[in-house]
Length: 307
Image (cartoon, rainbow, N blue to C red; front, side, top):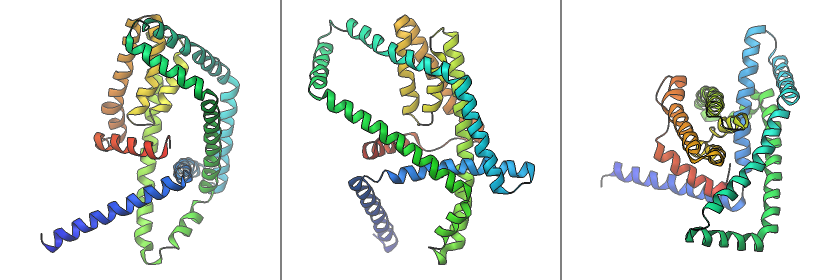
Protein backbone atom coordinates (compact mmCIF):
# COMPACT_ATOMS: atom_id res chain seq x y z
CA UNK A 1 0.00 0.00 0.00
CA UNK A 2 1.49 3.36 -1.06
CA UNK A 3 1.55 6.46 1.16
CA UNK A 4 -1.40 8.10 -0.60
CA UNK A 5 -3.68 5.09 -0.09
CA UNK A 6 -2.49 4.71 3.50
CA UNK A 7 -3.24 8.37 4.23
CA UNK A 8 -6.74 8.07 2.73
CA UNK A 9 -7.49 4.97 4.83
CA UNK A 10 -6.15 6.69 7.95
CA UNK A 11 -8.21 9.81 7.25
CA UNK A 12 -11.37 7.74 6.69
CA UNK A 13 -10.85 5.79 9.92
CA UNK A 14 -10.26 9.04 11.81
CA UNK A 15 -13.49 10.56 10.47
CA UNK A 16 -15.43 7.40 11.38
CA UNK A 17 -13.94 7.48 14.87
CA UNK A 18 -14.79 11.16 15.40
CA UNK A 19 -18.37 10.69 14.13
CA UNK A 20 -18.75 7.62 16.35
CA UNK A 21 -17.51 9.52 19.40
CA UNK A 22 -19.85 12.44 18.65
CA UNK A 23 -22.86 10.12 18.32
CA UNK A 24 -21.89 8.31 21.54
CA UNK A 25 -21.49 11.63 23.37
CA UNK A 26 -24.87 12.90 22.17
CA UNK A 27 -26.55 9.58 23.01
CA UNK A 28 -25.03 9.33 26.50
CA UNK A 29 -25.95 12.90 27.45
CA UNK A 30 -29.27 12.85 25.54
CA UNK A 31 -28.62 16.18 23.81
CA UNK A 32 -31.87 16.43 21.86
CA UNK A 33 -31.44 20.19 22.09
CA UNK A 34 -29.11 19.93 19.07
CA UNK A 35 -31.99 18.73 16.92
CA UNK A 36 -34.29 21.41 18.34
CA UNK A 37 -31.66 23.96 17.33
CA UNK A 38 -31.34 22.57 13.81
CA UNK A 39 -35.13 22.61 13.38
CA UNK A 40 -35.19 26.20 14.65
CA UNK A 41 -32.56 27.22 12.08
CA UNK A 42 -34.62 25.63 9.30
CA UNK A 43 -37.74 27.49 10.44
CA UNK A 44 -35.73 30.72 10.77
CA UNK A 45 -34.64 30.36 7.14
CA UNK A 46 -38.31 30.21 6.14
CA UNK A 47 -39.05 33.35 8.21
CA UNK A 48 -36.06 35.15 6.70
CA UNK A 49 -36.96 34.27 3.10
CA UNK A 50 -40.58 35.41 3.47
CA UNK A 51 -39.49 38.67 5.15
CA UNK A 52 -36.84 39.26 2.48
CA UNK A 53 -39.48 38.75 -0.24
CA UNK A 54 -41.78 41.31 1.44
CA UNK A 55 -38.83 43.72 1.67
CA UNK A 56 -38.13 43.37 -2.06
CA UNK A 57 -41.75 44.25 -2.86
CA UNK A 58 -42.38 47.16 -0.47
CA UNK A 59 -38.87 48.63 0.06
CA UNK A 60 -39.22 48.71 3.85
CA UNK A 61 -36.61 47.87 6.48
CA UNK A 62 -35.98 44.19 7.12
CA UNK A 63 -37.19 44.31 10.75
CA UNK A 64 -40.41 46.06 9.69
CA UNK A 65 -41.02 43.36 7.09
CA UNK A 66 -40.17 40.69 9.65
CA UNK A 67 -42.76 42.12 12.04
CA UNK A 68 -45.34 42.23 9.24
CA UNK A 69 -44.59 38.61 8.39
CA UNK A 70 -45.13 37.52 12.01
CA UNK A 71 -48.38 39.50 12.21
CA UNK A 72 -49.65 37.94 8.96
CA UNK A 73 -48.68 34.47 10.22
CA UNK A 74 -50.50 35.12 13.52
CA UNK A 75 -53.54 36.39 11.62
CA UNK A 76 -53.61 33.28 9.44
CA UNK A 77 -53.42 31.08 12.54
CA UNK A 78 -56.36 32.99 14.09
CA UNK A 79 -58.42 32.71 10.87
CA UNK A 80 -57.58 29.02 10.66
CA UNK A 81 -58.71 28.54 14.24
CA UNK A 82 -61.97 30.41 13.66
CA UNK A 83 -63.07 28.85 10.38
CA UNK A 84 -61.38 25.47 9.96
CA UNK A 85 -60.29 24.21 13.36
CA UNK A 86 -63.80 23.23 14.47
CA UNK A 87 -64.23 20.97 11.43
CA UNK A 88 -60.72 19.52 11.69
CA UNK A 89 -60.94 18.92 15.45
CA UNK A 90 -64.26 17.11 15.06
CA UNK A 91 -62.70 14.88 12.41
CA UNK A 92 -59.72 14.23 14.72
CA UNK A 93 -62.10 13.20 17.52
CA UNK A 94 -64.01 10.93 15.16
CA UNK A 95 -60.76 9.41 13.85
CA UNK A 96 -59.60 8.69 17.41
CA UNK A 97 -62.93 6.95 18.12
CA UNK A 98 -63.08 5.04 14.84
CA UNK A 99 -59.58 3.55 14.76
CA UNK A 100 -59.96 1.47 17.96
CA UNK A 101 -63.30 0.13 16.66
CA UNK A 102 -61.68 -0.90 13.38
CA UNK A 103 -58.79 -2.53 15.23
CA UNK A 104 -61.25 -4.46 17.39
CA UNK A 105 -63.03 -5.63 14.24
CA UNK A 106 -59.73 -6.87 12.82
CA UNK A 107 -58.91 -8.63 16.07
CA UNK A 108 -62.30 -10.37 16.06
CA UNK A 109 -61.65 -11.61 12.53
CA UNK A 110 -58.21 -12.84 13.52
CA UNK A 111 -59.36 -14.67 16.67
CA UNK A 112 -59.27 -18.05 14.95
CA UNK A 113 -55.57 -17.72 14.07
CA UNK A 114 -53.16 -19.24 16.61
CA UNK A 115 -50.50 -16.56 16.13
CA UNK A 116 -53.11 -13.86 16.70
CA UNK A 117 -54.24 -15.35 20.02
CA UNK A 118 -50.65 -15.59 21.26
CA UNK A 119 -49.91 -12.02 20.19
CA UNK A 120 -53.04 -10.66 21.89
CA UNK A 121 -52.19 -12.54 25.09
CA UNK A 122 -48.70 -10.98 25.15
CA UNK A 123 -50.16 -7.49 24.56
CA UNK A 124 -52.79 -8.02 27.28
CA UNK A 125 -50.21 -9.13 29.88
CA UNK A 126 -47.91 -6.26 28.94
CA UNK A 127 -50.74 -3.74 29.24
CA UNK A 128 -51.83 -5.11 32.64
CA UNK A 129 -48.32 -5.05 34.08
CA UNK A 130 -47.12 -1.73 32.60
CA UNK A 131 -50.31 0.10 31.67
CA UNK A 132 -49.87 2.89 34.21
CA UNK A 133 -46.18 3.41 33.53
CA UNK A 134 -46.74 3.38 29.77
CA UNK A 135 -49.51 5.95 30.11
CA UNK A 136 -47.33 8.21 32.24
CA UNK A 137 -44.43 7.77 29.81
CA UNK A 138 -46.67 8.73 26.87
CA UNK A 139 -47.93 11.83 28.68
CA UNK A 140 -44.38 12.78 29.66
CA UNK A 141 -43.13 12.40 26.08
CA UNK A 142 -46.07 14.45 24.77
CA UNK A 143 -45.27 17.29 27.19
CA UNK A 144 -41.58 17.15 26.27
CA UNK A 145 -42.47 17.26 22.58
CA UNK A 146 -44.76 20.25 23.08
CA UNK A 147 -42.08 22.03 25.11
CA UNK A 148 -39.46 21.36 22.40
CA UNK A 149 -41.85 22.71 19.75
CA UNK A 150 -42.40 25.95 21.70
CA UNK A 151 -38.64 26.40 22.25
CA UNK A 152 -37.99 25.72 18.55
CA UNK A 153 -40.47 28.40 17.43
CA UNK A 154 -39.10 30.99 19.89
CA UNK A 155 -35.51 30.26 18.78
CA UNK A 156 -36.53 30.53 15.12
CA UNK A 157 -38.21 33.91 15.71
CA UNK A 158 -35.12 35.38 17.38
CA UNK A 159 -32.67 33.92 14.84
CA UNK A 160 -34.76 35.12 11.90
CA UNK A 161 -35.15 38.60 13.44
CA UNK A 162 -31.42 39.34 13.29
CA UNK A 163 -29.56 36.55 11.44
CA UNK A 164 -26.44 38.69 10.81
CA UNK A 165 -25.66 38.83 14.53
CA UNK A 166 -25.60 35.04 14.87
CA UNK A 167 -23.70 34.63 11.60
CA UNK A 168 -21.07 37.16 12.73
CA UNK A 169 -20.77 35.38 16.05
CA UNK A 170 -19.98 32.05 14.36
CA UNK A 171 -17.56 33.72 11.91
CA UNK A 172 -15.67 35.37 14.77
CA UNK A 173 -14.68 31.91 16.02
CA UNK A 174 -12.90 31.13 12.74
CA UNK A 175 -10.82 34.18 11.84
CA UNK A 176 -8.51 32.34 9.44
CA UNK A 177 -11.35 30.64 7.56
CA UNK A 178 -13.85 33.51 7.42
CA UNK A 179 -14.00 33.76 3.63
CA UNK A 180 -14.53 30.01 3.16
CA UNK A 181 -17.11 29.92 5.94
CA UNK A 182 -19.01 32.87 4.43
CA UNK A 183 -19.16 31.04 1.11
CA UNK A 184 -20.34 27.90 2.92
CA UNK A 185 -23.13 29.84 4.69
CA UNK A 186 -24.20 31.38 1.38
CA UNK A 187 -24.41 28.01 -0.37
CA UNK A 188 -26.06 26.31 2.60
CA UNK A 189 -28.72 29.02 2.81
CA UNK A 190 -29.44 28.79 -0.92
CA UNK A 191 -29.70 24.99 -0.88
CA UNK A 192 -31.81 24.82 2.29
CA UNK A 193 -34.14 27.55 1.02
CA UNK A 194 -34.63 25.72 -2.28
CA UNK A 195 -35.20 22.40 -0.52
CA UNK A 196 -37.60 23.90 2.05
CA UNK A 197 -39.71 25.63 -0.60
CA UNK A 198 -39.88 22.43 -2.67
CA UNK A 199 -40.77 20.31 0.35
CA UNK A 200 -43.55 22.64 1.58
CA UNK A 201 -45.03 22.85 -1.92
CA UNK A 202 -44.86 19.06 -2.27
CA UNK A 203 -46.59 18.64 1.13
CA UNK A 204 -49.40 20.92 -0.02
CA UNK A 205 -49.82 19.03 -3.31
CA UNK A 206 -49.84 15.66 -1.50
CA UNK A 207 -52.49 16.90 0.95
CA UNK A 208 -54.74 18.07 -1.88
CA UNK A 209 -54.26 14.86 -3.91
CA UNK A 210 -54.97 12.71 -0.85
CA UNK A 211 -58.12 14.62 0.12
CA UNK A 212 -59.48 14.53 -3.45
CA UNK A 213 -58.61 10.85 -3.88
CA UNK A 214 -60.22 9.80 -0.59
CA UNK A 215 -63.34 11.83 -1.37
CA UNK A 216 -63.62 10.09 -4.76
CA UNK A 217 -63.30 6.73 -2.97
CA UNK A 218 -65.99 7.91 -0.51
CA UNK A 219 -63.74 7.44 2.54
CA UNK A 220 -64.86 9.31 5.64
CA UNK A 221 -62.62 11.91 7.35
CA UNK A 222 -60.86 12.68 4.07
CA UNK A 223 -59.83 16.19 5.21
CA UNK A 224 -57.92 15.19 8.33
CA UNK A 225 -56.40 12.15 6.58
CA UNK A 226 -55.19 14.40 3.76
CA UNK A 227 -53.66 16.92 6.17
CA UNK A 228 -51.97 14.06 8.03
CA UNK A 229 -50.58 12.66 4.76
CA UNK A 230 -49.17 16.07 3.79
CA UNK A 231 -47.55 16.68 7.18
CA UNK A 232 -46.03 13.21 7.46
CA UNK A 233 -44.65 13.38 3.91
CA UNK A 234 -41.97 15.63 5.46
CA UNK A 235 -40.47 12.37 6.77
CA UNK A 236 -38.95 10.47 3.81
CA UNK A 237 -39.90 6.80 3.29
CA UNK A 238 -41.64 6.25 6.64
CA UNK A 239 -43.98 9.26 6.60
CA UNK A 240 -46.24 8.08 3.74
CA UNK A 241 -46.36 4.58 5.27
CA UNK A 242 -47.46 5.93 8.67
CA UNK A 243 -50.08 8.24 7.14
CA UNK A 244 -51.54 5.38 5.07
CA UNK A 245 -52.30 3.20 8.13
CA UNK A 246 -55.37 5.09 9.50
CA UNK A 247 -56.76 5.61 5.98
CA UNK A 248 -56.44 1.92 5.13
CA UNK A 249 -58.03 0.95 8.45
CA UNK A 250 -61.01 3.24 7.78
CA UNK A 251 -61.30 1.75 4.30
CA UNK A 252 -61.21 -1.70 5.83
CA UNK A 253 -64.12 -0.80 8.12
CA UNK A 254 -66.20 -0.45 4.91
CA UNK A 255 -64.80 -3.38 2.92
CA UNK A 256 -61.56 -5.12 2.03
CA UNK A 257 -61.91 -3.80 -1.53
CA UNK A 258 -62.04 -0.23 -0.23
CA UNK A 259 -58.93 -0.84 1.87
CA UNK A 260 -57.05 -2.09 -1.20
CA UNK A 261 -58.20 0.93 -3.19
CA UNK A 262 -56.98 3.29 -0.45
CA UNK A 263 -53.65 1.47 -0.31
CA UNK A 264 -53.39 1.80 -4.08
CA UNK A 265 -54.16 5.53 -3.85
CA UNK A 266 -51.39 6.14 -1.29
CA UNK A 267 -48.95 4.05 -3.35
CA UNK A 268 -49.71 6.08 -6.50
CA UNK A 269 -49.31 9.37 -4.60
CA UNK A 270 -45.98 8.19 -3.15
CA UNK A 271 -44.74 7.22 -6.62
CA UNK A 272 -45.93 10.58 -7.99
CA UNK A 273 -44.11 12.42 -5.18
CA UNK A 274 -40.83 10.57 -5.72
CA UNK A 275 -40.72 10.55 -9.51
CA UNK A 276 -42.93 13.46 -10.66
CA UNK A 277 -43.70 16.10 -8.01
CA UNK A 278 -40.30 16.59 -6.35
CA UNK A 279 -38.22 16.21 -9.56
CA UNK A 280 -40.52 18.72 -11.29
CA UNK A 281 -40.16 21.23 -8.44
CA UNK A 282 -36.40 20.77 -8.20
CA UNK A 283 -36.14 20.53 -11.99
CA UNK A 284 -33.67 17.69 -11.54
CA UNK A 285 -33.41 14.19 -10.13
CA UNK A 286 -33.70 14.04 -6.36
CA UNK A 287 -31.84 13.44 -3.90
CA UNK A 288 -29.88 10.98 -1.71
CA UNK A 289 -29.48 7.29 -2.59
CA UNK A 290 -32.59 5.51 -1.16
CA UNK A 291 -30.65 2.79 0.69
CA UNK A 292 -28.39 5.36 2.38
CA UNK A 293 -31.35 7.55 3.35
CA UNK A 294 -33.25 4.57 4.78
CA UNK A 295 -30.22 3.30 6.75
CA UNK A 296 -29.52 6.72 8.26
CA UNK A 297 -33.19 7.14 9.22
CA UNK A 298 -33.17 3.79 11.05
CA UNK A 299 -29.82 4.55 12.74
CA UNK A 300 -30.70 8.08 13.86
CA UNK A 301 -34.23 6.98 14.83
CA UNK A 302 -32.76 4.31 17.10
CA UNK A 303 -30.36 6.83 18.63
CA UNK A 304 -32.56 9.92 18.99
CA UNK A 305 -36.19 8.91 18.47
CA UNK A 306 -38.57 11.12 16.46
CA UNK A 307 -36.06 13.96 16.09
